[in-house]
Image (cartoon, rainbow, N blue to C red; front, side, top):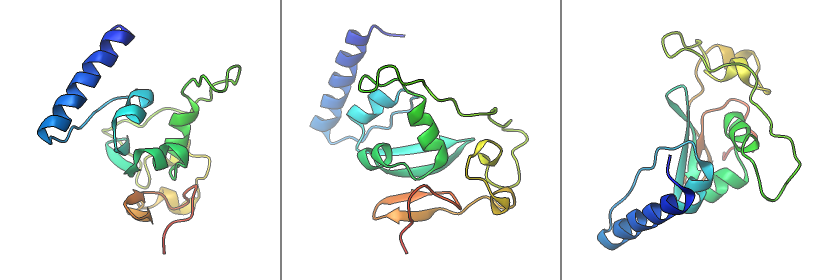
Length: 142
């Protein structure tokens, strides 16, 4: 782990170099604060599958997938001091024994029978944004 100041400087320099050379970067991290400041687009993965993707600000401001919301609610916020952090109940599944439907179904507060049968397909939420959820937190595009 890097000192926060050193981390910020390294990330700034890498981003500057990418901008100068027109290079795309893929950041793989659990640090949503870093992602929100660096990435134009965000893909949220659960059990090896992208469950939501789109413009970073839209995904963070209005998550469509229950796992994305769970992640965001488990991050400390300077704006909401004193608010207890929420945990996503249960445990992540073994990658060697994924459930037959949505891998998040055993932990999902919105789970219904259809979630347990077949993995949900990728559905558009809005232009440039998708989710894999039968019962998303936002209305999906028609």
